[in-house]
Image (cartoon, rainbow, N blue to C red; front, side):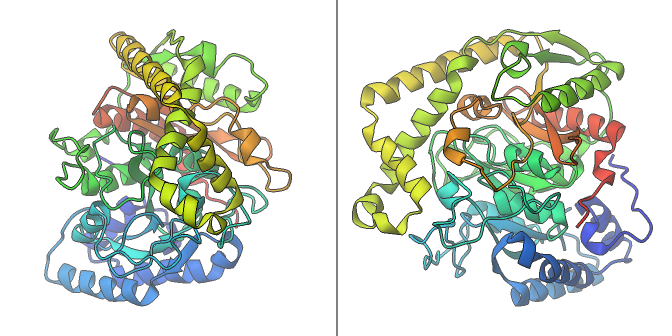
Length: 472
Protein backbone atom coordinates (compact mmCIF):
# COMPACT_ATOMS: atom_id res chain seq x y z
CA UNK A 1 0.00 0.00 0.00
CA UNK A 2 0.95 3.64 -0.34
CA UNK A 3 3.52 4.74 2.20
CA UNK A 4 4.25 8.39 1.39
CA UNK A 5 5.06 9.81 4.83
CA UNK A 6 3.47 13.07 5.86
CA UNK A 7 6.39 15.46 6.41
CA UNK A 8 6.36 17.44 9.63
CA UNK A 9 5.15 21.01 9.21
CA UNK A 10 3.93 20.42 5.64
CA UNK A 11 1.46 23.20 4.77
CA UNK A 12 -2.03 21.73 4.52
CA UNK A 13 -2.39 22.80 0.88
CA UNK A 14 0.68 20.70 0.04
CA UNK A 15 -0.72 17.50 1.52
CA UNK A 16 -1.39 14.75 -0.98
CA UNK A 17 -4.82 13.13 -1.23
CA UNK A 18 -3.36 10.07 0.45
CA UNK A 19 -1.81 12.03 3.31
CA UNK A 20 -4.89 14.18 3.90
CA UNK A 21 -7.18 11.16 3.84
CA UNK A 22 -5.08 9.32 6.41
CA UNK A 23 -5.10 12.33 8.72
CA UNK A 24 -8.88 12.75 8.40
CA UNK A 25 -9.45 9.07 9.18
CA UNK A 26 -7.39 9.49 12.34
CA UNK A 27 -9.38 12.57 13.31
CA UNK A 28 -6.26 14.74 13.07
CA UNK A 29 -7.51 16.91 10.20
CA UNK A 30 -10.88 18.38 9.35
CA UNK A 31 -12.22 18.79 5.78
CA UNK A 32 -13.09 22.35 6.82
CA UNK A 33 -9.46 23.09 7.74
CA UNK A 34 -8.18 21.53 4.54
CA UNK A 35 -10.67 23.33 2.29
CA UNK A 36 -9.93 26.66 3.98
CA UNK A 37 -6.21 26.07 3.45
CA UNK A 38 -6.76 25.50 -0.28
CA UNK A 39 -8.97 28.58 -0.58
CA UNK A 40 -6.32 30.64 1.22
CA UNK A 41 -3.68 29.28 -1.14
CA UNK A 42 -5.81 30.26 -4.13
CA UNK A 43 -6.28 33.75 -2.68
CA UNK A 44 -2.51 34.08 -2.17
CA UNK A 45 -1.42 32.83 -5.59
CA UNK A 46 -4.09 33.01 -8.27
CA UNK A 47 -3.46 36.64 -9.15
CA UNK A 48 -0.17 35.30 -10.56
CA UNK A 49 -1.19 31.82 -11.70
CA UNK A 50 -4.64 32.47 -13.23
CA UNK A 51 -5.56 28.81 -12.67
CA UNK A 52 -9.23 29.42 -11.88
CA UNK A 53 -11.98 30.73 -14.13
CA UNK A 54 -14.59 30.44 -11.38
CA UNK A 55 -14.08 29.95 -7.64
CA UNK A 56 -16.91 28.38 -5.62
CA UNK A 57 -15.63 29.27 -2.16
CA UNK A 58 -18.95 29.39 -0.28
CA UNK A 59 -20.19 26.17 -1.84
CA UNK A 60 -16.87 24.47 -1.08
CA UNK A 61 -17.01 25.43 2.59
CA UNK A 62 -20.57 24.16 2.86
CA UNK A 63 -19.55 20.84 1.28
CA UNK A 64 -16.61 20.67 3.73
CA UNK A 65 -18.92 21.16 6.71
CA UNK A 66 -21.15 18.34 5.45
CA UNK A 67 -18.10 16.09 5.03
CA UNK A 68 -16.92 16.96 8.53
CA UNK A 69 -20.30 16.03 10.01
CA UNK A 70 -20.26 12.71 8.19
CA UNK A 71 -16.77 11.92 9.42
CA UNK A 72 -17.68 12.79 13.00
CA UNK A 73 -20.39 10.13 12.69
CA UNK A 74 -17.78 7.66 11.47
CA UNK A 75 -19.06 7.74 7.89
CA UNK A 76 -16.29 7.69 5.27
CA UNK A 77 -17.48 7.48 1.68
CA UNK A 78 -14.21 6.89 -0.19
CA UNK A 79 -10.58 7.96 -0.49
CA UNK A 80 -11.87 11.22 -2.00
CA UNK A 81 -14.08 12.06 0.99
CA UNK A 82 -13.29 15.57 2.22
CA UNK A 83 -10.71 16.17 -0.54
CA UNK A 84 -10.76 19.57 -2.31
CA UNK A 85 -10.57 19.19 -6.08
CA UNK A 86 -11.25 21.32 -9.14
CA UNK A 87 -12.51 20.78 -12.68
CA UNK A 88 -11.29 21.86 -16.08
CA UNK A 89 -14.03 24.22 -17.22
CA UNK A 90 -15.52 21.86 -19.79
CA UNK A 91 -16.94 19.49 -17.16
CA UNK A 92 -20.61 20.33 -16.72
CA UNK A 93 -21.69 21.50 -13.28
CA UNK A 94 -25.41 21.78 -12.53
CA UNK A 95 -26.41 25.40 -12.03
CA UNK A 96 -22.81 26.58 -12.36
CA UNK A 97 -21.42 28.29 -15.45
CA UNK A 98 -19.29 26.08 -17.72
CA UNK A 99 -17.47 28.16 -20.35
CA UNK A 100 -14.96 25.82 -22.06
CA UNK A 101 -12.67 28.85 -21.91
CA UNK A 102 -14.64 30.58 -24.68
CA UNK A 103 -16.73 33.67 -25.24
CA UNK A 104 -19.13 31.39 -27.16
CA UNK A 105 -20.15 29.58 -23.95
CA UNK A 106 -19.44 32.32 -21.44
CA UNK A 107 -23.03 32.33 -20.18
CA UNK A 108 -23.77 28.59 -20.51
CA UNK A 109 -25.18 27.08 -17.30
CA UNK A 110 -25.76 23.30 -17.52
CA UNK A 111 -28.85 21.77 -15.97
CA UNK A 112 -27.00 18.72 -14.65
CA UNK A 113 -23.54 17.55 -13.67
CA UNK A 114 -21.23 15.62 -15.93
CA UNK A 115 -21.13 11.98 -14.83
CA UNK A 116 -17.57 12.45 -13.57
CA UNK A 117 -18.56 15.57 -11.64
CA UNK A 118 -21.45 13.70 -10.02
CA UNK A 119 -19.27 10.71 -9.16
CA UNK A 120 -16.63 12.83 -7.44
CA UNK A 121 -19.32 14.59 -5.44
CA UNK A 122 -20.88 11.25 -4.50
CA UNK A 123 -17.44 10.08 -3.36
CA UNK A 124 -17.38 13.03 -0.95
CA UNK A 125 -15.03 15.27 -2.92
CA UNK A 126 -15.25 19.03 -2.38
CA UNK A 127 -15.48 21.08 -5.56
CA UNK A 128 -13.41 24.27 -5.29
CA UNK A 129 -14.21 25.66 -8.73
CA UNK A 130 -13.66 25.61 -12.48
CA UNK A 131 -10.20 25.77 -14.00
CA UNK A 132 -8.60 27.64 -16.87
CA UNK A 133 -8.12 25.82 -20.16
CA UNK A 134 -7.25 26.44 -23.76
CA UNK A 135 -10.42 27.40 -25.58
CA UNK A 136 -12.58 24.37 -26.38
CA UNK A 137 -9.56 22.21 -25.46
CA UNK A 138 -7.50 23.22 -28.49
CA UNK A 139 -4.91 25.81 -29.34
CA UNK A 140 -3.36 28.12 -26.82
CA UNK A 141 -2.38 30.13 -24.97
CA UNK A 142 -4.49 32.71 -26.80
CA UNK A 143 -4.93 36.29 -25.58
CA UNK A 144 -7.94 36.81 -27.88
CA UNK A 145 -10.08 34.65 -25.56
CA UNK A 146 -11.79 36.13 -22.46
CA UNK A 147 -9.57 34.52 -19.81
CA UNK A 148 -5.93 34.94 -18.80
CA UNK A 149 -3.71 31.97 -19.67
CA UNK A 150 -2.62 29.91 -16.66
CA UNK A 151 1.04 30.26 -15.67
CA UNK A 152 3.51 27.56 -14.68
CA UNK A 153 4.23 27.51 -10.91
CA UNK A 154 7.86 26.49 -11.56
CA UNK A 155 8.42 29.66 -13.58
CA UNK A 156 5.59 32.14 -14.05
CA UNK A 157 7.03 33.32 -17.36
CA UNK A 158 6.44 29.86 -18.84
CA UNK A 159 3.39 28.03 -20.15
CA UNK A 160 1.73 25.10 -18.42
CA UNK A 161 0.97 23.22 -21.61
CA UNK A 162 -2.57 22.53 -22.67
CA UNK A 163 -5.30 22.22 -22.97
CA UNK A 164 -5.75 21.34 -19.27
CA UNK A 165 -3.65 24.35 -18.34
CA UNK A 166 -5.38 25.39 -15.13
CA UNK A 167 -5.50 21.78 -13.94
CA UNK A 168 -1.73 21.49 -14.20
CA UNK A 169 -1.12 24.83 -12.54
CA UNK A 170 -3.62 24.35 -9.70
CA UNK A 171 -2.36 20.92 -8.66
CA UNK A 172 1.34 21.79 -8.94
CA UNK A 173 0.92 24.96 -6.88
CA UNK A 174 -1.14 23.37 -4.10
CA UNK A 175 -4.36 25.21 -4.92
CA UNK A 176 -6.20 21.88 -5.25
CA UNK A 177 -5.22 18.37 -4.21
CA UNK A 178 -6.47 16.96 -7.49
CA UNK A 179 -8.15 17.99 -10.73
CA UNK A 180 -9.77 16.51 -13.79
CA UNK A 181 -8.40 17.24 -17.21
CA UNK A 182 -9.44 16.08 -20.66
CA UNK A 183 -7.16 14.66 -23.32
CA UNK A 184 -7.54 14.45 -27.11
CA UNK A 185 -3.93 14.71 -28.22
CA UNK A 186 -2.10 14.96 -24.91
CA UNK A 187 -3.99 17.50 -22.82
CA UNK A 188 -3.69 15.57 -19.55
CA UNK A 189 -0.17 14.22 -19.85
CA UNK A 190 1.26 17.38 -21.45
CA UNK A 191 0.46 19.80 -18.61
CA UNK A 192 1.30 17.06 -16.10
CA UNK A 193 4.79 16.75 -17.58
CA UNK A 194 5.38 20.51 -17.89
CA UNK A 195 4.06 21.21 -14.38
CA UNK A 196 5.81 18.32 -12.62
CA UNK A 197 2.73 16.35 -11.58
CA UNK A 198 1.10 13.01 -12.44
CA UNK A 199 -1.51 12.79 -15.19
CA UNK A 200 -3.32 9.67 -16.40
CA UNK A 201 -5.18 9.25 -19.68
CA UNK A 202 -7.18 6.09 -19.07
CA UNK A 203 -8.15 3.58 -21.74
CA UNK A 204 -10.76 4.94 -24.16
CA UNK A 205 -14.11 4.12 -22.58
CA UNK A 206 -12.79 3.59 -19.05
CA UNK A 207 -14.17 6.96 -17.84
CA UNK A 208 -17.46 8.48 -18.98
CA UNK A 209 -17.38 11.65 -21.08
CA UNK A 210 -21.09 12.40 -20.64
CA UNK A 211 -21.36 16.08 -19.80
CA UNK A 212 -17.79 16.83 -20.93
CA UNK A 213 -17.75 19.29 -23.83
CA UNK A 214 -16.62 17.54 -27.01
CA UNK A 215 -13.53 18.25 -29.04
CA UNK A 216 -13.17 14.95 -30.93
CA UNK A 217 -15.72 12.23 -30.12
CA UNK A 218 -13.47 9.35 -31.07
CA UNK A 219 -10.31 10.60 -29.32
CA UNK A 220 -11.48 12.48 -26.20
CA UNK A 221 -10.58 11.01 -22.81
CA UNK A 222 -11.31 12.21 -19.26
CA UNK A 223 -8.86 11.59 -16.45
CA UNK A 224 -7.18 12.70 -13.22
CA UNK A 225 -4.24 15.02 -12.58
CA UNK A 226 -2.64 14.85 -9.12
CA UNK A 227 0.62 15.30 -7.24
CA UNK A 228 1.35 11.58 -6.78
CA UNK A 229 0.52 8.26 -8.42
CA UNK A 230 -1.50 7.04 -5.42
CA UNK A 231 -3.66 10.18 -5.63
CA UNK A 232 -4.29 9.46 -9.30
CA UNK A 233 -5.40 5.92 -8.40
CA UNK A 234 -7.87 7.28 -5.84
CA UNK A 235 -9.39 9.81 -8.26
CA UNK A 236 -9.63 7.21 -11.01
CA UNK A 237 -11.45 4.87 -8.61
CA UNK A 238 -14.10 7.50 -8.06
CA UNK A 239 -14.79 8.25 -11.73
CA UNK A 240 -14.17 4.97 -13.61
CA UNK A 241 -16.91 2.64 -14.81
CA UNK A 242 -19.73 2.19 -17.26
CA UNK A 243 -22.17 5.02 -17.85
CA UNK A 244 -25.33 4.50 -19.92
CA UNK A 245 -25.24 8.21 -20.78
CA UNK A 246 -22.01 7.65 -22.74
CA UNK A 247 -22.42 5.09 -25.54
CA UNK A 248 -18.64 4.68 -25.81
CA UNK A 249 -18.13 3.86 -22.13
CA UNK A 250 -16.97 0.34 -21.39
CA UNK A 251 -18.78 -2.22 -19.27
CA UNK A 252 -15.46 -3.81 -18.27
CA UNK A 253 -15.31 -4.34 -14.48
CA UNK A 254 -13.50 -1.67 -12.45
CA UNK A 255 -10.73 -3.14 -10.26
CA UNK A 256 -9.51 -1.75 -6.94
CA UNK A 257 -6.72 0.52 -8.12
CA UNK A 258 -5.30 0.92 -4.63
CA UNK A 259 -4.08 -2.69 -4.88
CA UNK A 260 -1.64 -1.49 -7.56
CA UNK A 261 0.10 0.87 -5.14
CA UNK A 262 2.97 -1.47 -4.46
CA UNK A 263 6.51 -1.52 -5.72
CA UNK A 264 7.63 -4.18 -8.15
CA UNK A 265 8.96 -4.11 -11.68
CA UNK A 266 11.45 -6.97 -11.73
CA UNK A 267 11.02 -9.02 -14.90
CA UNK A 268 8.58 -6.52 -16.42
CA UNK A 269 9.29 -5.92 -20.12
CA UNK A 270 9.55 -2.28 -21.16
CA UNK A 271 9.35 -1.50 -24.86
CA UNK A 272 11.45 1.38 -26.22
CA UNK A 273 10.29 2.76 -29.60
CA UNK A 274 13.65 4.46 -30.06
CA UNK A 275 13.22 5.32 -33.74
CA UNK A 276 10.53 7.93 -33.00
CA UNK A 277 10.85 8.94 -29.36
CA UNK A 278 14.61 8.90 -28.82
CA UNK A 279 16.34 9.48 -32.16
CA UNK A 280 17.67 13.03 -32.74
CA UNK A 281 15.06 15.37 -34.22
CA UNK A 282 14.95 19.18 -34.48
CA UNK A 283 11.60 19.29 -32.65
CA UNK A 284 12.86 17.23 -29.68
CA UNK A 285 14.89 18.67 -26.80
CA UNK A 286 18.02 16.55 -26.11
CA UNK A 287 17.89 17.35 -22.38
CA UNK A 288 14.40 15.83 -22.18
CA UNK A 289 15.51 12.67 -23.95
CA UNK A 290 18.63 12.29 -21.80
CA UNK A 291 16.63 12.72 -18.59
CA UNK A 292 14.09 10.09 -19.60
CA UNK A 293 16.87 7.72 -20.74
CA UNK A 294 18.34 8.04 -17.24
CA UNK A 295 14.96 7.28 -15.66
CA UNK A 296 14.53 4.20 -17.83
CA UNK A 297 18.01 3.10 -16.75
CA UNK A 298 16.83 3.36 -13.15
CA UNK A 299 13.86 1.13 -13.93
CA UNK A 300 16.28 -1.32 -15.51
CA UNK A 301 18.39 -1.25 -12.34
CA UNK A 302 15.24 -2.18 -10.41
CA UNK A 303 14.90 -5.31 -12.53
CA UNK A 304 12.89 -4.24 -15.56
CA UNK A 305 13.85 -5.72 -18.93
CA UNK A 306 14.26 -3.01 -21.57
CA UNK A 307 14.04 -3.88 -25.25
CA UNK A 308 13.69 -1.82 -28.40
CA UNK A 309 10.50 -2.16 -30.41
CA UNK A 310 9.50 -0.94 -33.85
CA UNK A 311 6.30 0.98 -34.61
CA UNK A 312 6.70 2.34 -38.16
CA UNK A 313 3.21 3.89 -38.27
CA UNK A 314 4.26 6.40 -35.60
CA UNK A 315 5.57 8.68 -38.34
CA UNK A 316 1.99 9.19 -39.55
CA UNK A 317 0.01 9.08 -36.31
CA UNK A 318 0.33 12.80 -35.46
CA UNK A 319 -1.18 13.72 -38.82
CA UNK A 320 -4.00 11.20 -38.35
CA UNK A 321 -4.71 12.56 -34.87
CA UNK A 322 -4.90 16.13 -36.21
CA UNK A 323 -7.12 15.30 -39.21
CA UNK A 324 -9.58 13.33 -37.11
CA UNK A 325 -9.55 16.00 -34.38
CA UNK A 326 -10.27 19.04 -36.54
CA UNK A 327 -12.80 17.18 -38.69
CA UNK A 328 -14.83 16.06 -35.69
CA UNK A 329 -14.38 19.42 -33.95
CA UNK A 330 -15.72 21.28 -36.97
CA UNK A 331 -18.73 18.97 -37.12
CA UNK A 332 -19.47 19.73 -33.46
CA UNK A 333 -18.91 23.50 -33.66
CA UNK A 334 -20.20 24.15 -37.19
CA UNK A 335 -23.43 25.98 -36.20
CA UNK A 336 -21.59 28.50 -34.01
CA UNK A 337 -18.71 28.88 -36.47
CA UNK A 338 -21.25 29.92 -39.11
CA UNK A 339 -23.36 32.23 -36.96
CA UNK A 340 -20.98 33.51 -34.24
CA UNK A 341 -17.44 33.26 -35.62
CA UNK A 342 -16.35 36.53 -33.98
CA UNK A 343 -16.91 35.01 -30.53
CA UNK A 344 -14.19 32.37 -31.00
CA UNK A 345 -10.56 33.13 -30.24
CA UNK A 346 -8.37 33.50 -33.28
CA UNK A 347 -6.35 30.30 -32.85
CA UNK A 348 -9.30 27.97 -32.30
CA UNK A 349 -11.43 29.59 -35.00
CA UNK A 350 -8.66 29.14 -37.57
CA UNK A 351 -7.92 25.56 -36.56
CA UNK A 352 -11.59 24.53 -36.47
CA UNK A 353 -12.09 26.00 -39.93
CA UNK A 354 -9.37 23.72 -41.25
CA UNK A 355 -11.80 20.93 -40.42
CA UNK A 356 -14.24 22.37 -42.94
CA UNK A 357 -11.60 21.94 -45.64
CA UNK A 358 -11.05 18.26 -44.90
CA UNK A 359 -12.67 15.88 -47.36
CA UNK A 360 -14.32 12.58 -46.57
CA UNK A 361 -11.28 10.98 -48.21
CA UNK A 362 -8.93 12.82 -45.80
CA UNK A 363 -10.94 11.67 -42.80
CA UNK A 364 -11.12 8.08 -44.03
CA UNK A 365 -7.41 7.95 -44.77
CA UNK A 366 -6.70 9.19 -41.25
CA UNK A 367 -8.96 6.46 -39.88
CA UNK A 368 -7.09 3.89 -41.96
CA UNK A 369 -3.83 5.06 -40.37
CA UNK A 370 -5.52 4.74 -37.01
CA UNK A 371 -6.53 1.15 -37.76
CA UNK A 372 -2.96 0.31 -38.80
CA UNK A 373 -1.57 1.95 -35.67
CA UNK A 374 -3.93 0.03 -33.40
CA UNK A 375 -2.95 -3.24 -35.06
CA UNK A 376 0.75 -2.39 -34.87
CA UNK A 377 0.58 -1.38 -31.20
CA UNK A 378 -1.43 -4.50 -30.35
CA UNK A 379 1.22 -6.70 -31.97
CA UNK A 380 4.04 -4.96 -30.08
CA UNK A 381 2.14 -5.18 -26.79
CA UNK A 382 2.14 -8.97 -27.18
CA UNK A 383 5.92 -8.87 -26.71
CA UNK A 384 6.25 -6.20 -23.98
CA UNK A 385 4.25 -5.16 -20.93
CA UNK A 386 4.57 -1.40 -21.31
CA UNK A 387 5.95 1.25 -23.63
CA UNK A 388 8.15 3.87 -21.95
CA UNK A 389 8.90 7.23 -23.60
CA UNK A 390 9.32 10.92 -22.86
CA UNK A 391 5.93 12.54 -22.30
CA UNK A 392 6.71 15.77 -24.17
CA UNK A 393 9.22 16.76 -26.80
CA UNK A 394 10.17 19.94 -24.91
CA UNK A 395 10.07 21.39 -21.38
CA UNK A 396 7.66 24.26 -20.73
CA UNK A 397 8.28 27.09 -23.19
CA UNK A 398 8.37 30.76 -22.24
CA UNK A 399 5.26 32.77 -23.09
CA UNK A 400 7.42 35.28 -24.92
CA UNK A 401 7.88 34.17 -28.50
CA UNK A 402 5.79 31.02 -28.12
CA UNK A 403 3.87 30.03 -31.26
CA UNK A 404 1.27 27.32 -30.54
CA UNK A 405 0.51 26.84 -34.23
CA UNK A 406 4.09 26.05 -35.25
CA UNK A 407 4.50 23.84 -32.17
CA UNK A 408 1.52 21.77 -33.33
CA UNK A 409 3.44 20.82 -36.48
CA UNK A 410 6.24 19.00 -34.65
CA UNK A 411 6.30 15.49 -33.27
CA UNK A 412 3.82 14.50 -30.58
CA UNK A 413 4.78 11.88 -28.01
CA UNK A 414 1.26 11.80 -26.55
CA UNK A 415 -1.05 11.68 -29.61
CA UNK A 416 -0.28 8.03 -30.48
CA UNK A 417 -2.06 6.93 -27.31
CA UNK A 418 -5.15 9.02 -28.07
CA UNK A 419 -5.31 7.52 -31.56
CA UNK A 420 -4.95 3.98 -30.22
CA UNK A 421 -6.91 4.57 -26.99
CA UNK A 422 -4.28 2.88 -24.81
CA UNK A 423 -3.86 3.95 -21.16
CA UNK A 424 -0.87 6.22 -20.57
CA UNK A 425 0.47 8.05 -17.52
CA UNK A 426 3.01 10.84 -17.13
CA UNK A 427 5.16 10.73 -13.99
CA UNK A 428 7.84 13.31 -13.08
CA UNK A 429 11.38 12.08 -13.74
CA UNK A 430 13.61 15.14 -13.30
CA UNK A 431 14.29 18.74 -14.21
CA UNK A 432 16.14 20.72 -16.83
CA UNK A 433 19.21 22.70 -15.79
CA UNK A 434 16.95 25.74 -15.59
CA UNK A 435 14.61 23.99 -13.14
CA UNK A 436 11.70 23.05 -15.40
CA UNK A 437 10.02 19.65 -14.88
CA UNK A 438 10.35 16.68 -17.25
CA UNK A 439 7.90 13.77 -17.41
CA UNK A 440 8.23 10.12 -18.38
CA UNK A 441 5.30 8.41 -20.09
CA UNK A 442 4.32 4.79 -19.40
CA UNK A 443 1.66 3.24 -21.62
CA UNK A 444 0.04 -0.17 -21.31
CA UNK A 445 -2.44 -2.61 -22.77
CA UNK A 446 -6.16 -1.75 -22.94
CA UNK A 447 -7.66 -1.49 -19.45
CA UNK A 448 -4.34 -2.27 -17.78
CA UNK A 449 -4.51 0.86 -15.67
CA UNK A 450 -3.50 -1.30 -12.67
CA UNK A 451 -0.22 -2.26 -14.37
CA UNK A 452 0.46 1.28 -15.54
CA UNK A 453 -0.19 2.60 -12.03
CA UNK A 454 2.08 0.02 -10.43
CA UNK A 455 4.94 0.74 -12.85
CA UNK A 456 4.62 4.49 -12.30
CA UNK A 457 4.33 4.05 -8.53
CA UNK A 458 7.45 1.88 -8.45
CA UNK A 459 9.44 4.56 -10.25
CA UNK A 460 7.95 7.36 -8.13
CA UNK A 461 8.86 5.66 -4.85
CA UNK A 462 12.39 5.05 -6.11
CA UNK A 463 13.04 8.50 -7.57
CA UNK A 464 10.94 10.54 -5.08
CA UNK A 465 10.66 13.63 -7.27
CA UNK A 466 7.34 14.35 -5.56
CA UNK A 467 9.24 15.64 -2.52
CA UNK A 468 10.20 18.80 -4.47
CA UNK A 469 7.53 21.49 -4.75
CA UNK A 470 7.52 24.63 -6.94
CA UNK A 471 9.42 27.55 -5.37
CA UNK A 472 6.56 30.07 -5.38
